[in-house]
View 1 (cartoon, each protein chain N blue to C red):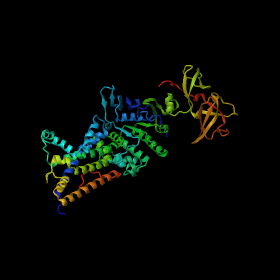
View 2: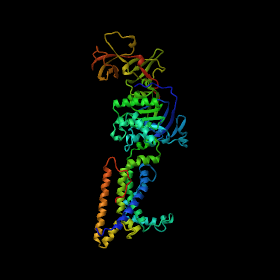
View 3: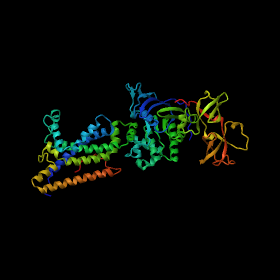
View 4: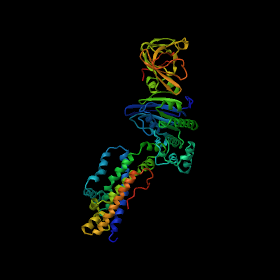
Amino acid sequence: MNGFPLAPFLLSLQVTAVATLLMLVVGLPLALLLARRRFPGAMLVETVVNLPLVLPPTVVGYYLLLLLGRGGPAVEWLGWRLLFTWGAAAIASAVVGLPLLVQSARAAIASVDPALENAARTLGSSEAAVIWRVTLPLARRGILAGGVLAAARALGEFGATLMVAGDIPERTQTLPLAIYDAVQNRQYAQANWMVLVMTVLAFASLWAVRRFEQRGRAAPTAAAAPQG
Amino acid sequence: MVASPAPSVAPRLAADFTMQRSGFHLHARLELGAEILVLFGPSGSGKTTTLHAIAGLITPERGYILLDGRTLFRRDDASGPIAQRVPARRRNIGYVFQHYALFPHLTALENVAFALRGPTGRATAAAWLERMNLAHLADRYPHELSGGQQQRVAIARALAPAPRVLLLDEPFSALDAAARQRVQCELAALQREMQLVVIYVTHRLEDAFAVGDRLAVMRDGQLEQTGAIEDVFRYPATQQVAEIMGVPNLFRALVTEVGPEGTVLDWHGLRLNAPPHAFEVGRTVTAYIQPEDIKILYPDRPVMDAVQHNVVAGRIVESSLRPGMRQLRVCLTNGHEIEVRYPAYTYRPLNLQVGEEVRLSLRKEALVVISHAHEN
């Protein structure tokens, strides 16, 4: 077992967990909005959310540099200095994974019968309660599937992460970056380990997604958690 | 089950509102007390939209909705501000949706307890399941219940928070006859017990007769006629109502004579005596006669006074048996067909086969001339 790179592995888990949380916090309201409300600019919002699917990761990374870097809104308005920290890696992973969560969650929410939401309203539920007690529980399989897929994508993020977080061992070097370094330095034993771990996690994610999509009732009610 | 007509109950729910829907303009004007009003009409006539507006699920353009003196909605001008709009969750109106809309991720008990809180809420929900004979199915999920059971869970869920009004949208369309009858009886009993204001939407006339006190006929977003069910059925105010109600033997005829003893109609060459009406001669009117009110005359017996009017001849073109009744289609000498219905045990001596000639009496008193044939 010698040569297993524990530090990048743990860092990847941490980054993926935070990125998944970010995606859920941003993605679920977006999915609800896109599925249930008609508003001007809905197409635009959707297209912007989906852009990272087709843009080169370096382009996404460049935009993030503008947002997070010196003179960008994160520093100027919020005072967050995130560049070249694992926080930047988490944000980059979240941006790249977000479209997968939003698409899946939006489809799941749109397929919830509006009559059920109306039934909850006539039974005294506020709009928030309708979402919490009816819409989200009924859409949970699609949300879980999207969450797992997005988390898997976040775990594998490379390009944008490299641009905004760099490749600092023990601090921002996640598994995909560590693999690149290991191969560059001809440390094939380490590379093999990490490639195996990534493959197993990716396989398990896709397997889980299929299970969520297939299973009828009795899916676990826990929120989508990162694989690990 | 025959519901007693309740025309004089004190009004509790009053609604008068309009809204523009794709395809038609809806104008609903209803006033009802603790009774069951059947909102009847073909699909797409605006019945569900009316219920949605009363429940607060959609917002009318203009008008008002009052419940027990409380304003649920008011807007005096379609382009002006909404003076009052109580959200659906605060209206205290129970709603039974067309396909029940039970929450599929909750058990029967959890469905009924949805609007209730805490352990007392669960106890209330359990009591409701008991009341609907569903206690043994409390832990089943909706997909594990039959259509009738789902229906009763939906009613229990709507009534558990003790609403003042119950709205039902095509509630029994998916049930078989036996289950339908049971739930209908249950509903009528609950209405009396809880003094509920009930609006019951259906496009099935049988359902209307089974549960309703009064009937409101809706077509293309307009309320055509409101009244006791028997009255609306027997005396439809317009040809449209008659057609919607499925009144058979509807025809158009020309008024040829008007007098104190009666009106004489010309139905494509057939001279028919009808009760007196204030029509001018030469006007075209719509008239009908119920199939049960047509008598078949025995050729070898003298024609009695009661049936001496409107004796017409025709040939049987179709004969079918219904529960306890036989129904004939007879082609009259003027080329039109009419339906004749009589108890299966009568007219035994007559040879009433397809192709046989018969003489019919269209009793004068039973010949209904619709008074507003040209109004809308």
